[in-house]
Length: 451
Image (cartoon, helix red, strand yellow):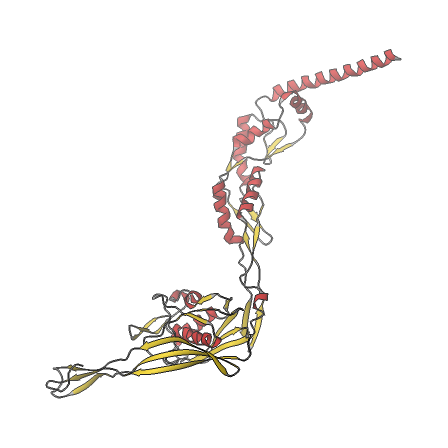
Protein backbone atom coordinates (compact mmCIF):
# COMPACT_ATOMS: atom_id res chain seq x y z
CA UNK A 1 0.00 0.00 0.00
CA UNK A 2 2.86 2.38 0.71
CA UNK A 3 4.30 2.13 -2.79
CA UNK A 4 0.88 3.11 -4.23
CA UNK A 5 0.73 6.26 -2.05
CA UNK A 6 4.28 7.18 -2.92
CA UNK A 7 3.59 6.76 -6.60
CA UNK A 8 0.45 8.91 -6.25
CA UNK A 9 2.38 11.69 -4.44
CA UNK A 10 5.12 11.71 -7.05
CA UNK A 11 2.52 11.75 -9.78
CA UNK A 12 0.73 14.80 -8.31
CA UNK A 13 4.00 16.62 -7.68
CA UNK A 14 5.08 16.01 -11.23
CA UNK A 15 1.79 17.35 -12.56
CA UNK A 16 2.10 20.56 -10.50
CA UNK A 17 5.69 21.07 -11.66
CA UNK A 18 4.65 20.59 -15.27
CA UNK A 19 1.79 23.11 -14.79
CA UNK A 20 4.06 25.70 -13.19
CA UNK A 21 6.65 25.28 -15.92
CA UNK A 22 3.92 25.66 -18.52
CA UNK A 23 2.52 28.81 -16.86
CA UNK A 24 5.97 30.32 -16.38
CA UNK A 25 6.88 29.53 -19.92
CA UNK A 26 3.69 31.07 -21.21
CA UNK A 27 4.21 34.11 -18.95
CA UNK A 28 7.73 34.57 -20.22
CA UNK A 29 6.49 34.46 -23.78
CA UNK A 30 3.61 36.88 -23.08
CA UNK A 31 5.77 39.22 -21.04
CA UNK A 32 8.34 39.30 -23.78
CA UNK A 33 5.55 39.99 -26.25
CA UNK A 34 4.24 42.89 -24.05
CA UNK A 35 7.72 44.32 -23.48
CA UNK A 36 7.63 48.11 -24.03
CA UNK A 37 3.86 48.14 -24.08
CA UNK A 38 1.15 48.97 -21.54
CA UNK A 39 -0.29 45.77 -20.03
CA UNK A 40 -3.41 44.58 -21.86
CA UNK A 41 -6.92 45.69 -20.78
CA UNK A 42 -5.52 48.73 -18.96
CA UNK A 43 -7.62 51.89 -18.73
CA UNK A 44 -6.50 55.23 -17.27
CA UNK A 45 -9.34 57.58 -16.30
CA UNK A 46 -11.55 55.46 -18.55
CA UNK A 47 -9.25 55.80 -21.58
CA UNK A 48 -8.11 52.44 -23.05
CA UNK A 49 -4.32 52.32 -23.30
CA UNK A 50 -3.76 48.57 -22.86
CA UNK A 51 -1.42 46.96 -25.35
CA UNK A 52 -0.18 50.29 -26.70
CA UNK A 53 3.49 51.21 -26.84
CA UNK A 54 4.41 53.74 -24.19
CA UNK A 55 4.61 56.74 -26.55
CA UNK A 56 1.33 55.86 -28.28
CA UNK A 57 -0.36 55.50 -24.88
CA UNK A 58 1.02 58.87 -23.87
CA UNK A 59 -0.36 60.50 -27.03
CA UNK A 60 -3.77 58.92 -26.48
CA UNK A 61 -3.89 60.07 -22.88
CA UNK A 62 -2.93 63.64 -23.78
CA UNK A 63 -5.59 63.75 -26.48
CA UNK A 64 -8.44 62.34 -24.43
CA UNK A 65 -7.77 63.28 -20.82
CA UNK A 66 -9.19 66.82 -20.99
CA UNK A 67 -12.62 65.56 -22.07
CA UNK A 68 -12.66 63.09 -19.22
CA UNK A 69 -11.61 65.21 -16.26
CA UNK A 70 -11.89 68.90 -17.13
CA UNK A 71 -15.39 69.47 -15.83
CA UNK A 72 -13.74 71.22 -12.90
CA UNK A 73 -13.38 70.49 -9.21
CA UNK A 74 -16.83 70.16 -7.68
CA UNK A 75 -17.35 71.38 -4.11
CA UNK A 76 -20.66 70.36 -2.58
CA UNK A 77 -22.86 70.98 0.42
CA UNK A 78 -26.43 69.98 1.21
CA UNK A 79 -27.87 73.02 -0.53
CA UNK A 80 -25.48 73.82 -3.39
CA UNK A 81 -22.64 72.71 -5.65
CA UNK A 82 -19.88 74.96 -6.95
CA UNK A 83 -17.50 73.97 -9.73
CA UNK A 84 -14.04 75.51 -10.04
CA UNK A 85 -11.96 75.01 -13.18
CA UNK A 86 -9.01 72.68 -12.64
CA UNK A 87 -6.68 75.32 -14.09
CA UNK A 88 -7.97 77.91 -11.61
CA UNK A 89 -7.00 75.51 -8.83
CA UNK A 90 -3.55 75.11 -10.42
CA UNK A 91 -4.03 71.33 -10.45
CA UNK A 92 -1.76 69.64 -12.99
CA UNK A 93 -1.81 66.21 -14.67
CA UNK A 94 1.28 64.01 -14.49
CA UNK A 95 0.99 61.85 -17.62
CA UNK A 96 4.40 60.23 -17.11
CA UNK A 97 3.59 59.13 -13.57
CA UNK A 98 0.12 57.97 -14.60
CA UNK A 99 1.64 55.65 -17.21
CA UNK A 100 4.38 54.53 -14.83
CA UNK A 101 1.68 53.26 -12.50
CA UNK A 102 0.71 50.74 -15.16
CA UNK A 103 4.06 49.03 -14.62
CA UNK A 104 4.25 49.68 -10.88
CA UNK A 105 0.94 47.94 -10.42
CA UNK A 106 1.86 45.32 -13.06
CA UNK A 107 3.91 42.25 -13.31
CA UNK A 108 7.11 42.40 -11.25
CA UNK A 109 8.92 39.12 -10.48
CA UNK A 110 7.90 35.57 -11.29
CA UNK A 111 4.69 35.98 -9.29
CA UNK A 112 3.79 38.94 -11.49
CA UNK A 113 4.47 36.92 -14.61
CA UNK A 114 2.09 34.24 -13.40
CA UNK A 115 -0.57 36.84 -12.59
CA UNK A 116 0.11 38.43 -15.97
CA UNK A 117 -0.75 35.27 -17.81
CA UNK A 118 -3.84 34.65 -15.70
CA UNK A 119 -5.13 38.24 -15.82
CA UNK A 120 -4.72 39.26 -19.44
CA UNK A 121 -8.47 39.10 -19.98
CA UNK A 122 -9.32 41.05 -16.80
CA UNK A 123 -9.85 44.84 -17.13
CA UNK A 124 -7.69 47.12 -14.98
CA UNK A 125 -8.93 50.66 -14.30
CA UNK A 126 -6.24 53.05 -13.09
CA UNK A 127 -6.67 56.66 -11.99
CA UNK A 128 -4.90 59.73 -13.26
CA UNK A 129 -2.06 61.22 -11.20
CA UNK A 130 -2.62 64.86 -10.25
CA UNK A 131 -0.09 67.43 -9.06
CA UNK A 132 -0.93 70.43 -6.91
CA UNK A 133 0.41 73.12 -4.63
CA UNK A 134 -1.13 73.29 -1.16
CA UNK A 135 -0.90 77.07 -1.00
CA UNK A 136 -2.88 77.44 -4.23
CA UNK A 137 -5.58 75.09 -2.96
CA UNK A 138 -5.81 77.08 0.29
CA UNK A 139 -6.46 80.26 -1.72
CA UNK A 140 -9.21 78.55 -3.71
CA UNK A 141 -10.96 77.36 -0.57
CA UNK A 142 -10.67 80.79 1.05
CA UNK A 143 -12.40 82.34 -1.96
CA UNK A 144 -15.05 79.62 -1.89
CA UNK A 145 -15.97 80.53 1.66
CA UNK A 146 -18.02 83.48 0.44
CA UNK A 147 -20.11 81.05 -1.64
CA UNK A 148 -20.87 78.70 1.22
CA UNK A 149 -20.65 80.78 4.42
CA UNK A 150 -24.00 81.67 5.96
CA UNK A 151 -23.94 84.36 8.67
CA UNK A 152 -25.75 83.75 11.92
CA UNK A 153 -28.86 85.84 12.53
CA UNK A 154 -29.39 87.46 15.90
CA UNK A 155 -32.69 87.13 17.67
CA UNK A 156 -34.67 90.32 17.07
CA UNK A 157 -37.47 92.33 18.57
CA UNK A 158 -39.95 94.36 16.54
CA UNK A 159 -42.18 97.05 18.03
CA UNK A 160 -45.37 96.64 16.02
CA UNK A 161 -48.94 97.72 16.74
CA UNK A 162 -47.98 98.82 20.26
CA UNK A 163 -46.55 95.44 21.20
CA UNK A 164 -43.21 93.62 21.08
CA UNK A 165 -42.74 90.74 18.66
CA UNK A 166 -39.82 88.35 19.23
CA UNK A 167 -38.02 86.81 16.24
CA UNK A 168 -35.87 83.71 17.02
CA UNK A 169 -32.16 83.57 16.21
CA UNK A 170 -30.65 81.40 13.49
CA UNK A 171 -27.26 79.69 13.65
CA UNK A 172 -24.92 80.24 10.72
CA UNK A 173 -22.09 78.25 9.22
CA UNK A 174 -18.51 78.91 8.18
CA UNK A 175 -16.35 76.76 5.92
CA UNK A 176 -13.87 74.67 7.91
CA UNK A 177 -11.01 75.45 5.56
CA UNK A 178 -8.45 73.03 7.01
CA UNK A 179 -10.79 70.01 6.91
CA UNK A 180 -12.06 70.91 3.43
CA UNK A 181 -8.48 71.23 2.17
CA UNK A 182 -7.65 67.81 3.60
CA UNK A 183 -10.67 66.28 1.84
CA UNK A 184 -9.67 67.89 -1.46
CA UNK A 185 -6.12 66.56 -1.20
CA UNK A 186 -7.43 63.07 -0.37
CA UNK A 187 -9.64 63.20 -3.45
CA UNK A 188 -6.76 64.32 -5.69
CA UNK A 189 -4.47 61.64 -4.26
CA UNK A 190 -7.14 59.10 -5.23
CA UNK A 191 -7.14 60.50 -8.78
CA UNK A 192 -10.50 62.25 -8.48
CA UNK A 193 -11.55 65.87 -8.84
CA UNK A 194 -14.41 65.45 -6.43
CA UNK A 195 -17.06 65.99 -5.51
CA UNK A 196 -15.45 67.40 -2.39
CA UNK A 197 -17.83 67.66 0.53
CA UNK A 198 -17.42 71.05 2.21
CA UNK A 199 -16.79 70.84 5.95
CA UNK A 200 -18.43 73.49 8.14
CA UNK A 201 -18.14 74.99 11.58
CA UNK A 202 -21.27 76.28 13.29
CA UNK A 203 -21.45 80.04 13.78
CA UNK A 204 -23.54 81.10 16.75
CA UNK A 205 -25.32 84.48 16.87
CA UNK A 206 -24.37 87.25 19.27
CA UNK A 207 -27.96 87.51 20.53
CA UNK A 208 -30.10 84.43 21.17
CA UNK A 209 -33.82 84.32 21.85
CA UNK A 210 -33.35 83.44 25.52
CA UNK A 211 -31.14 86.53 25.90
CA UNK A 212 -33.91 88.97 24.99
CA UNK A 213 -36.91 87.53 26.78
CA UNK A 214 -36.32 90.05 29.58
CA UNK A 215 -36.80 92.96 27.15
CA UNK A 216 -40.42 93.72 27.89
CA UNK A 217 -40.62 97.11 29.64
CA UNK A 218 -40.53 100.65 28.29
CA UNK A 219 -37.59 102.39 29.96
CA UNK A 220 -37.61 105.67 28.03
CA UNK A 221 -39.56 107.47 25.29
CA UNK A 222 -38.92 110.76 23.51
CA UNK A 223 -40.70 112.45 20.61
CA UNK A 224 -39.56 115.31 18.37
CA UNK A 225 -41.39 116.90 15.45
CA UNK A 226 -40.25 117.91 11.96
CA UNK A 227 -41.63 119.41 8.77
CA UNK A 228 -42.51 116.53 6.39
CA UNK A 229 -42.68 119.02 3.51
CA UNK A 230 -38.87 119.19 3.66
CA UNK A 231 -38.59 116.09 1.48
CA UNK A 232 -34.82 115.62 1.50
CA UNK A 233 -34.54 116.07 5.26
CA UNK A 234 -37.48 113.71 5.86
CA UNK A 235 -35.83 111.11 3.62
CA UNK A 236 -32.65 111.33 5.70
CA UNK A 237 -34.59 110.95 8.95
CA UNK A 238 -36.34 107.82 7.69
CA UNK A 239 -33.13 106.22 6.42
CA UNK A 240 -31.24 106.88 9.65
CA UNK A 241 -34.12 105.72 11.85
CA UNK A 242 -34.54 102.48 9.88
CA UNK A 243 -30.83 101.66 10.14
CA UNK A 244 -30.83 101.60 13.95
CA UNK A 245 -34.41 100.50 14.66
CA UNK A 246 -34.41 97.17 16.51
CA UNK A 247 -30.77 97.37 17.62
CA UNK A 248 -30.13 95.28 20.73
CA UNK A 249 -27.41 96.40 23.16
CA UNK A 250 -26.16 93.74 25.55
CA UNK A 251 -25.17 94.49 29.18
CA UNK A 252 -22.02 96.64 29.40
CA UNK A 253 -21.98 97.10 25.61
CA UNK A 254 -21.32 100.62 24.25
CA UNK A 255 -23.54 101.81 21.41
CA UNK A 256 -22.05 104.23 18.86
CA UNK A 257 -24.55 106.04 16.67
CA UNK A 258 -21.92 106.78 14.03
CA UNK A 259 -20.99 103.11 13.79
CA UNK A 260 -24.62 101.99 13.72
CA UNK A 261 -25.56 104.44 10.97
CA UNK A 262 -22.56 103.63 8.80
CA UNK A 263 -21.72 105.71 5.69
CA UNK A 264 -24.07 108.59 4.88
CA UNK A 265 -23.49 109.41 1.22
CA UNK A 266 -25.69 109.96 -1.80
CA UNK A 267 -24.75 106.43 -2.85
CA UNK A 268 -26.38 105.23 0.38
CA UNK A 269 -29.57 107.14 -0.40
CA UNK A 270 -28.97 110.26 1.68
CA UNK A 271 -29.76 113.69 0.23
CA UNK A 272 -28.63 117.26 0.76
CA UNK A 273 -30.50 119.13 3.51
CA UNK A 274 -29.72 122.00 5.95
CA UNK A 275 -26.94 121.49 8.52
CA UNK A 276 -24.98 123.73 10.91
CA UNK A 277 -21.40 124.44 9.82
CA UNK A 278 -19.18 127.17 11.28
CA UNK A 279 -22.19 128.75 12.97
CA UNK A 280 -24.00 128.98 9.64
CA UNK A 281 -26.73 126.93 7.97
CA UNK A 282 -25.55 125.22 4.78
CA UNK A 283 -26.72 122.35 2.56
CA UNK A 284 -24.96 119.02 3.02
CA UNK A 285 -25.63 115.33 2.43
CA UNK A 286 -27.34 113.74 5.43
CA UNK A 287 -28.79 116.94 6.85
CA UNK A 288 -31.31 116.19 9.60
CA UNK A 289 -29.57 113.17 11.11
CA UNK A 290 -28.75 115.21 14.21
CA UNK A 291 -32.46 115.09 15.01
CA UNK A 292 -32.18 111.30 15.18
CA UNK A 293 -29.21 111.72 17.55
CA UNK A 294 -31.13 114.21 19.70
CA UNK A 295 -34.31 112.14 19.90
CA UNK A 296 -32.39 108.98 20.78
CA UNK A 297 -30.24 110.86 23.31
CA UNK A 298 -33.31 112.00 25.25
CA UNK A 299 -34.85 108.52 25.26
CA UNK A 300 -31.54 107.19 26.62
CA UNK A 301 -31.60 109.85 29.37
CA UNK A 302 -35.11 108.77 30.35
CA UNK A 303 -33.98 105.13 30.44
CA UNK A 304 -31.16 105.93 32.86
CA UNK A 305 -28.39 104.57 30.64
CA UNK A 306 -24.84 105.87 30.91
CA UNK A 307 -23.88 108.61 28.45
CA UNK A 308 -20.35 108.08 27.12
CA UNK A 309 -20.13 110.79 24.47
CA UNK A 310 -22.40 113.63 23.39
CA UNK A 311 -21.87 117.13 22.01
CA UNK A 312 -24.37 119.99 21.65
CA UNK A 313 -24.91 122.10 18.55
CA UNK A 314 -23.15 125.43 18.26
CA UNK A 315 -26.50 127.20 18.46
CA UNK A 316 -30.01 126.42 19.75
CA UNK A 317 -32.21 124.13 17.62
CA UNK A 318 -35.96 124.14 17.10
CA UNK A 319 -36.84 120.51 17.87
CA UNK A 320 -35.39 120.12 21.40
CA UNK A 321 -34.87 122.28 24.51
CA UNK A 322 -31.51 123.88 25.26
CA UNK A 323 -29.01 121.40 26.64
CA UNK A 324 -30.94 118.38 25.39
CA UNK A 325 -29.67 118.32 21.82
CA UNK A 326 -26.98 116.06 20.37
CA UNK A 327 -24.99 116.41 17.18
CA UNK A 328 -23.03 113.85 15.20
CA UNK A 329 -20.69 114.00 12.22
CA UNK A 330 -18.83 111.17 10.53
CA UNK A 331 -16.30 113.58 9.02
CA UNK A 332 -15.61 115.55 12.20
CA UNK A 333 -15.63 112.44 14.38
CA UNK A 334 -18.46 113.75 16.54
CA UNK A 335 -20.49 110.88 17.96
CA UNK A 336 -23.28 110.03 20.36
CA UNK A 337 -22.42 107.01 22.51
CA UNK A 338 -24.00 105.37 25.50
CA UNK A 339 -23.41 102.22 27.53
CA UNK A 340 -25.97 99.70 28.66
CA UNK A 341 -25.22 99.84 32.37
CA UNK A 342 -28.07 97.50 33.29
CA UNK A 343 -27.88 93.76 33.90
CA UNK A 344 -30.17 93.00 30.95
CA UNK A 345 -30.26 93.69 27.21
CA UNK A 346 -31.97 96.84 25.96
CA UNK A 347 -33.49 97.52 22.55
CA UNK A 348 -33.79 100.69 20.48
CA UNK A 349 -37.03 101.34 18.65
CA UNK A 350 -37.07 104.47 16.51
CA UNK A 351 -39.63 105.31 13.87
CA UNK A 352 -41.13 108.10 11.79
CA UNK A 353 -44.88 108.65 11.91
CA UNK A 354 -46.48 111.65 10.19
CA UNK A 355 -44.48 114.64 11.48
CA UNK A 356 -43.05 112.85 14.52
CA UNK A 357 -39.78 111.05 15.20
CA UNK A 358 -40.30 108.62 18.09
CA UNK A 359 -37.49 106.92 20.01
CA UNK A 360 -38.12 104.21 22.60
CA UNK A 361 -35.77 102.23 24.81
CA UNK A 362 -37.06 98.83 25.94
CA UNK A 363 -35.48 96.68 28.63
CA UNK A 364 -36.16 95.14 32.01
CA UNK A 365 -37.56 97.40 34.72
CA UNK A 366 -36.22 95.88 37.91
CA UNK A 367 -37.79 98.40 40.29
CA UNK A 368 -41.37 99.50 39.63
CA UNK A 369 -41.14 102.50 41.96
CA UNK A 370 -38.11 104.00 40.20
CA UNK A 371 -38.58 107.07 37.99
CA UNK A 372 -36.19 109.36 36.13
CA UNK A 373 -36.63 113.00 35.18
CA UNK A 374 -34.41 115.67 33.67
CA UNK A 375 -33.93 119.10 35.25
CA UNK A 376 -32.48 122.17 33.53
CA UNK A 377 -30.63 125.19 34.90
CA UNK A 378 -30.34 127.99 32.36
CA UNK A 379 -28.42 131.26 32.50
CA UNK A 380 -28.83 133.89 29.80
CA UNK A 381 -25.79 135.65 28.32
CA UNK A 382 -26.51 139.01 26.72
CA UNK A 383 -24.96 139.72 23.30
CA UNK A 384 -22.29 142.37 22.84
CA UNK A 385 -23.20 145.56 20.98
CA UNK A 386 -20.59 146.37 18.35
CA UNK A 387 -20.69 149.83 16.72
CA UNK A 388 -18.79 150.34 13.46
CA UNK A 389 -18.28 153.49 11.41
CA UNK A 390 -19.45 153.36 7.80
CA UNK A 391 -18.54 156.41 5.68
CA UNK A 392 -21.05 155.31 3.05
CA UNK A 393 -23.95 156.03 5.40
CA UNK A 394 -25.58 159.46 5.76
CA UNK A 395 -24.16 161.65 8.50
CA UNK A 396 -25.53 160.81 11.93
CA UNK A 397 -27.46 157.73 10.75
CA UNK A 398 -27.47 154.39 12.56
CA UNK A 399 -28.26 151.02 10.95
CA UNK A 400 -28.53 147.61 12.64
CA UNK A 401 -26.51 145.32 10.37
CA UNK A 402 -26.90 142.23 12.55
CA UNK A 403 -29.44 141.64 15.27
CA UNK A 404 -27.95 140.25 18.42
CA UNK A 405 -29.00 136.95 19.94
CA UNK A 406 -28.74 135.83 23.51
CA UNK A 407 -26.38 133.07 24.49
CA UNK A 408 -26.94 130.53 27.23
CA UNK A 409 -25.11 128.50 29.82
CA UNK A 410 -27.19 125.38 30.41
CA UNK A 411 -26.74 122.64 33.00
CA UNK A 412 -28.64 119.37 32.67
CA UNK A 413 -29.24 117.09 35.66
CA UNK A 414 -30.70 113.61 35.78
CA UNK A 415 -32.77 113.03 38.90
CA UNK A 416 -33.70 109.54 40.08
CA UNK A 417 -36.61 109.08 42.46
CA UNK A 418 -37.82 105.98 44.22
CA UNK A 419 -41.36 105.79 45.54
CA UNK A 420 -41.73 109.54 45.11
CA UNK A 421 -38.49 110.50 46.90
CA UNK A 422 -35.42 111.87 45.11
CA UNK A 423 -32.45 109.62 45.79
CA UNK A 424 -29.92 110.74 43.19
CA UNK A 425 -29.11 113.89 41.21
CA UNK A 426 -26.33 113.80 38.62
CA UNK A 427 -24.93 116.62 36.49
CA UNK A 428 -24.93 115.26 32.95
CA UNK A 429 -23.75 118.23 30.91
CA UNK A 430 -22.85 121.90 30.98
CA UNK A 431 -23.32 123.50 27.56
CA UNK A 432 -22.39 126.96 26.35
CA UNK A 433 -24.30 128.49 23.46
CA UNK A 434 -22.37 131.51 22.28
CA UNK A 435 -24.34 134.77 21.93
CA UNK A 436 -24.44 136.54 18.57
CA UNK A 437 -23.13 140.12 18.58
CA UNK A 438 -25.43 142.97 17.65
CA UNK A 439 -23.64 145.01 14.96
CA UNK A 440 -24.63 148.66 14.42
CA UNK A 441 -23.26 150.77 11.58
CA UNK A 442 -23.08 154.59 12.02
CA UNK A 443 -22.51 157.35 9.49
CA UNK A 444 -19.77 160.04 9.68
CA UNK A 445 -19.71 161.98 12.90
CA UNK A 446 -22.26 159.59 14.32
CA UNK A 447 -22.12 158.78 17.96
CA UNK A 448 -20.86 155.52 19.29
CA UNK A 449 -17.71 153.57 19.01
CA UNK A 450 -16.69 149.97 18.84
CA UNK A 451 -17.22 148.28 22.11
